[in-house]
Image (tube, rainbow, N blue to C red; front, side, top):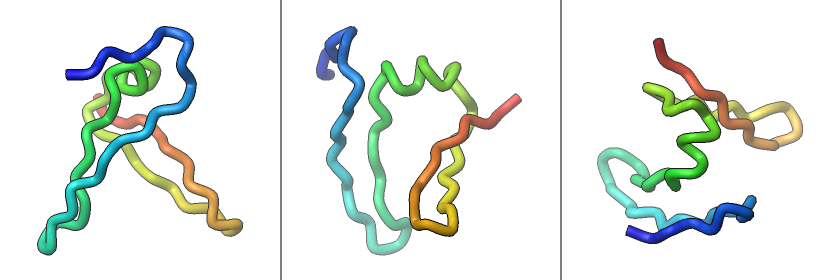
Length: 58
């Protein structure tokens, strides 16, 4: 498992393509912690085509 630098603010991850399910990715631990260790995340595409990530869960 990689270690992430504490001052890093950009994270690249590899996508594993699956014909049935789309793509599978591992969310970096610092990002999960910034989101508050959510039960789920939601990707929201706005009218300009930008993508926002929202934490969800209990």
